[in-house]
Image (tube, rainbow, N blue to C red):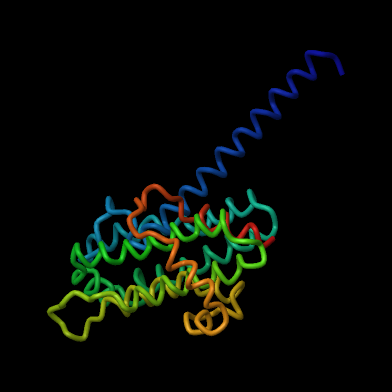
Length: 240
């Protein structure tokens, strides 16, 4: 192989690797945007409070499976499995909202006030901040209970938010949004958190994790600042 051939091959390989890296970033950002939409973290996207907005709201989810499949190929085996499981989980509330129970979803979203969404987003901010702290400050042997209990704390707090008053008293926004988040994370909890599957099990088996989270997490972070997917992977990656 002469010098010029070697240089040409090197340039080609570098271009391929750069292109591959950019594509992986694009897929991750696409998945992250989808997750944030389901979890109502993106305030630029209007809530689906009527059938017309709902159709637009549901449209981006059509590419989720393809993005998950592509992004999983960018990851080592264990994290690839986590990505696939997370993608599978996110599709559950999407199917519930966009297909099976569209009218119920519209009624719940229509009842959500700005103050209610602020309370909900503060709990999500606390969760994301907790993941950052866990990834940097918790020993390897304590990663699992702290991660699982952070997820369960998020669910526990959502179900106990101060609810808005809806015209229809049968509407319970906490149950609706709590159930949607629970559906989204259920596969991850099933895969990783057998011993810490609920907030009660965290109270019984990992009180130190709950104490740590209560002392460390803050609820005033900007949700746009954090990539939800990478925040999960930073913590889970330490388990592989």
